[in-house]
Image 1 (cartoon, rainbow, N blue to C red):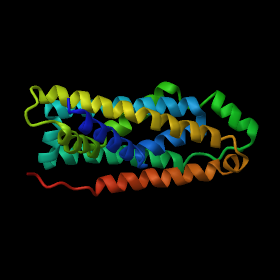
Image 2: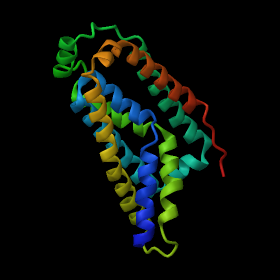
Image 3: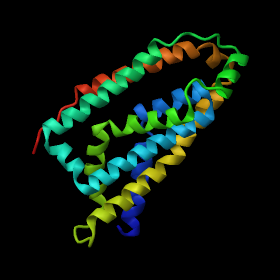
Length: 216
């Protein structure tokens, strides 16, 4: 493991990176607004679980393959882009409910999507984004000493620390969005928030589809 100074720098940098909104944050907020804080928290857990796939893949060298193989990167990129576009289309085409306090409470008590579905949605939102894999491969090794006896194990430990540090931020987004869902203005605008989230998910999908790498 890095010494204390580098470990603290790693944690602080991770906090700053977790404050940056992206598809993961949008997924948490959308589910928390529509189905309550519990759904937002479950969405965050699904995203965290998806992050561990990238951590172990990077430790095993799979992420290195993605960063050097245009075909491998393009395959995962198009699958991930298609998934984000599909999520965006679902939100854009969703029927507009009558956003009263009673209907919001009912929707949060009986969400249309099961918590298992919310978890899996968060999981795949993270797993199918090759940029996350490349991020771990580029970011974590900077904090591993060249003479570390077991670099793969150190990578897994640092990656795990990074994901655990993201949990408070994910929970914060879920709690904030769950609280906002009870505000009158937010309740009245839920339909338009769905549309906005749909456009943003589609935008993330298009941005991912346009991402390119140059094999080394």
